Length: 343
Image: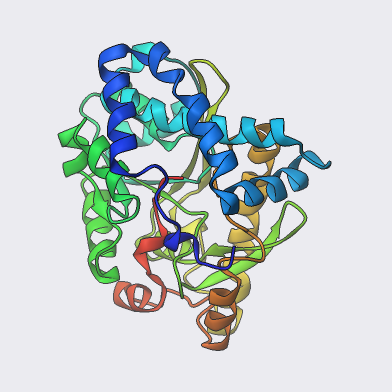
């Protein structure tokens, strides 16, 4: 459990992922879901770090000692959402019962041609965001994704939707290039979606209360939102079993309200902490309502990222502000590889 989450080996390998994709495409979702049971057994029996991380997390969120069935349900839920990516990314949304909440406010911004940052997390399925394409066919959704993490899964699923693959903003590139790509997309009235609950090695973070203890959340997404002065909408795609998903959108901030640009340098750390703490509280409420949807299979509180957090604090980088210009924000805060990794 001491290795950073980005160093975790990819579960199953290329052959296993190709096999389940082939079964899903040629045998259908019902047949493919039968494969979820041996996959769950594999992680229960072979992948000790993930199994232990699941047990420790479930103890926090359930308020009791979890049993094997709890851990199996947690892993099975994760495997089910990974399988459903095959269908969601290939546009087969009719297979699913997706209930959508809060879309009206986001749709109004889209209709006005506004660029919006859509912040998600490793809670449920971020791919349920594809439902937006069915309601706004001309809408372009750009995903900030580290394509080098879980390469087998990324390559195989990208093959299902070349257009979506072409619209990915690679989080593995230089931080300046990431921010410029985000800025350009937003200026064109596009949605830019990214996951904001994991920090990359050495990235500036803020530790705030989350499920009973302080956890590290990355600063960069919020500083970019403040620098670019764009609204932030939270998105949660919660898996409810079977073919059911709840897709929820919540307006979180309106451009300048994300972080006040005029705040003094002395108070910037607290300004960042305030917005991150507010986000963590919203995320916690969603997690408590869907506890088996949490897919950070590592020690989110005191394990993988604790050393990185301490190093960043020693370097004086935690809570760094974007400054008066975009370049300052890009230099000080962006460590792209922490964003957008699946599972």
